[in-house]
Length: 81
Image (cartoon, rainbow, N blue to C red; front, side, top):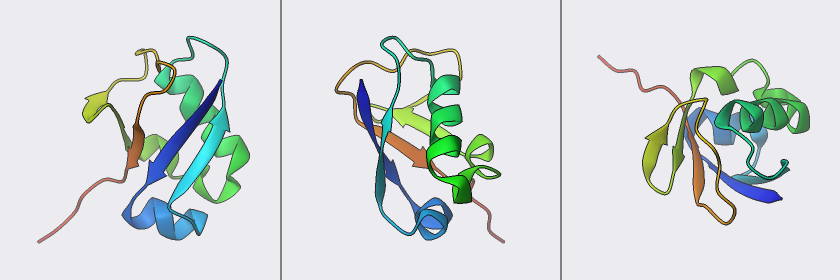
């Protein structure tokens, strides 16, 4: 299945676009989605594991399944001072 992943802040800058479409197997986990993003967009390979992944507006952990048609967002870590 294809998953559209929205990119924000540094992830958007590294990828040079605001979203990517990633092909994953049915019932793929967030961890598998991260691997596929890193393969498809090499500029994100060293960054994607530091990002949060939100599915349907809620943060997900690597073991969660990505449902078909879900809104997915890659959210970079926040820093400030």
